[in-house]
Image 1 (cartoon, helix red, strand yellow):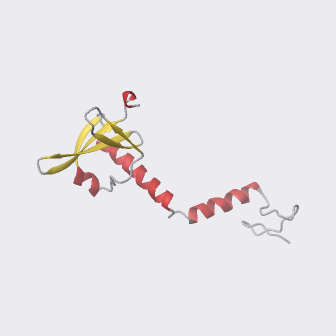
Image 2 (cartoon, helix red, strand yellow):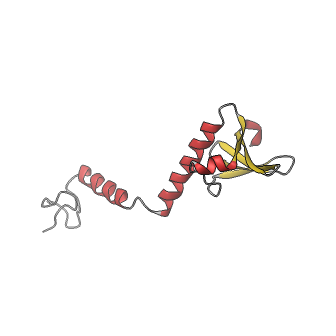
Length: 122
């Protein structure tokens, strides 16, 4: 006698059946995924989403300059990005989805030049 892995009811039908309904199957795998929320993939995705949110927040005009320490302080991680783009000067912008940043040093201050992805960058 088999029982449903989610609701523990007795299963009727095929001998290899694991769930009594589509709802129980969905519920079981949702809970299993939720319990495994600390996977590497999840952590990286969360950081990428935070990076994008911060870049968008600090870059309202399409191009901006922000102190590196200010972004880092609010949780930005320059080590997590989705892709990059190299301009004609050879400078490499790192992107978190459609928002990018370039590290520059002005005087003794580290800064980020923030931009938004443009069609010509393709």
